[in-house]
Amino acid sequence: MWIVPDTESSEPGDTQREIERELASGELFAVASGVSGSRGREAAIRIRQQGARLWAGRLRRGSTVRLPGAAYGHLFIAQGAATLECAGRFEHDAVSLTASDAE
Image (spheres, rainbow, N blue to C red):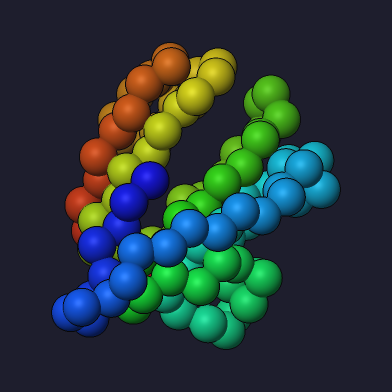
């Protein structure tokens, strides 16, 4: 995934991180973030975009999760299905979100 940096003349780069342990938790976790600090972001790969955060998770069937607030978001459902409050059920799909309890 390419995230446009918020500074000009930044050199492109790539970083890999093993996330199997975090996926096994059944919770959302920060994979990449332009913001350091709270809610697990300190373990995320640092990116040069203050407004961007990439969260991932392998949720257990029947579990409920609250998506982190953001002015804009994009939810990918790679496997299985999800029901979004006020939006319905989505299976193997992607959903764009705006003003979702913006942080």
